[in-house]
Image (cartoon, rainbow, N blue to C red):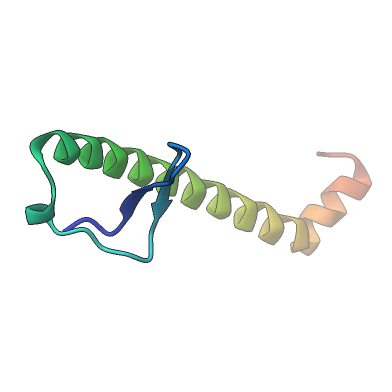
Length: 77
């Protein structure tokens, strides 16, 4: 079961709704390929977003470190 659904609007645009689930049985073979590609793309985007959050958190923690602040004042960094 996919944890998203691709919805086609009246004007031909496609929207991804992550609140709905799509069972495998409801898809044609062509749609299954499209859903598998989209699932891979969404997993990659989630991984990139998670890494960005981790890097931001690490930078925030480093900036709060008093030793780091002192080194910046002295001019070491």
